Picture 1 (spheres, rainbow, N blue to C red):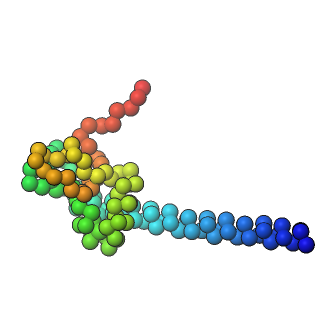
Picture 2: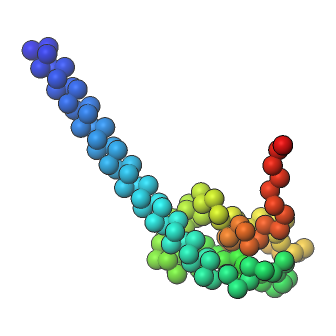
Picture 3: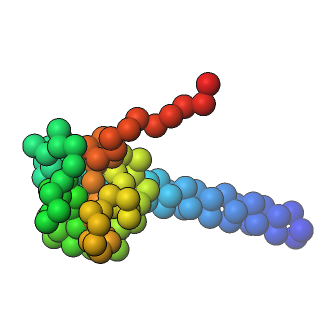
Length: 123
């Protein structure tokens, strides 16, 4: 009887682990697909402005709002916000990106288009 209980426990644990791994795999594939969708959207929208060194005081075309991205990609604004925040090639607008007197808005840009100075490496 104890052996049957142990076998049942082990089989249940293995089944639970397999189900968890399948779910994790699906989430990662969806995340990668959403990352590509959002990056492609931003790239197509802003590639002609990549050579700009600074935007205009009115509107810098290299930055795209969360709602614009969500509308274009058919993803929810929360999903866009999450994916943009974890994507290594996308960065949020920060206070130092603003012209004096402008208020901070939730906008995103491709890092290589807006980062003027290369990252320093420790050597």
